[in-house]
Image 1 (cartoon, rainbow, N blue to C red):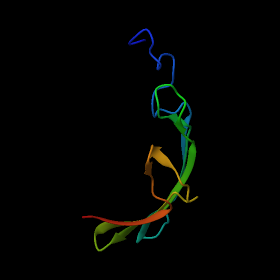
Image 2 (image 1 turned 180 degrees about the vertical axis):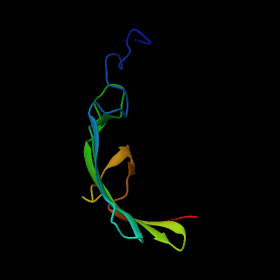
Image 3 (image 1 turned 90 degrees about the horizontal axis):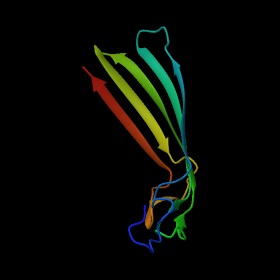
Length: 118
């Protein structure tokens, strides 16, 4: 709806909300028969975010971006505890992108996570 008779944002796309957004996941898991290794999993995540307008007139925008993230997870039974080790690679394509105008996001980065459930 119009806030004023000359509202420039009338019938325009909302700021920072893309018209196109796709997120998909591929998960492969394997449960070995051994006593120590409980689960091995590989996960790949794909995200497509369309262009987002940064002004009410829909004349300036942040371009679309595609991201590919992934991780491998190993769950172990060690010393009466469940231990998980996860290695993740975020932004595998080293994409230079922004979610908010003027705030660049990290390029390819790595994360190692260790969890112990007792």
